[in-house]
Image (cartoon, rainbow, N blue to C red):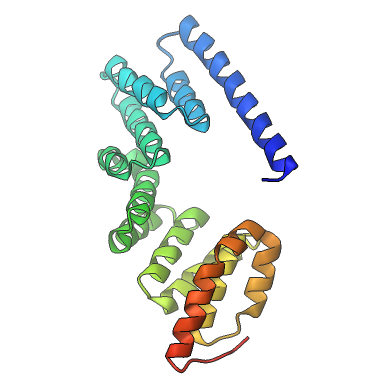
Length: 227
C-alpha cells in the first residue's frame, strides 16, 4: 500500500469514527429516529464493525416493528451488513424479504450475493430482474455483464459492457473485462487493456491471471490474435 493510500484510509476511518460518535449522540437525543440507526449501522460497516452493526439493526427491527416502510429499510441495511461481512447466505435471506419499494436495489444485491457465492446463473436472473426497474443503472448493467461473461455468453456480455461504457467511459473494471470479451471473440482488444491500465491499474494487475488463462484457452483452440 502506498503512503497516500495509507493516509487516505486513516482519514476515512477518522471520518467514520466521528460520524459514529455524532449518530450515537443523535440517537440518545431522539431514540425514535429510525434513519439514524440505519446510518449508524452503515458507518459501523465502514469501520468493519459487522457484529455491532448487526446487533444495532436487529434491535432496530424490534423497536420499529410497527412501521412497515422502516422495517423494509432496516432489512436492506442488515442484508448489506451480511454482504460486507461476506456472509452471503444471510444476506440473501434479508434481501429476499424486500417488497416493491426496495425491489430494484434488493434484486441487485441478491444478484451480487449470488455472484459472490459463485452461482452466476441465479445472479444473472436477479440482475436482469433488477434491470427492469433501473435500465440505465451502471452498477446493474455491469453485474449483468459480469455474470454473462462468467457463464460464457460473450456476445451478450459485450452488448452490456458497451452499455456500461457508454454511460461511464471512465470505468476501468468494465473496460478491462470488455477487453477480455473482445479477446475471446477475436476482435480488437489491445486498446481496451491499455485504457484499463490507465483507468484502474489495480484491477488491471489483478486481472493478469485471467488474461493469461484466456490467452492459453485461445491457443489451445487454435485461436486468433486480433490486437
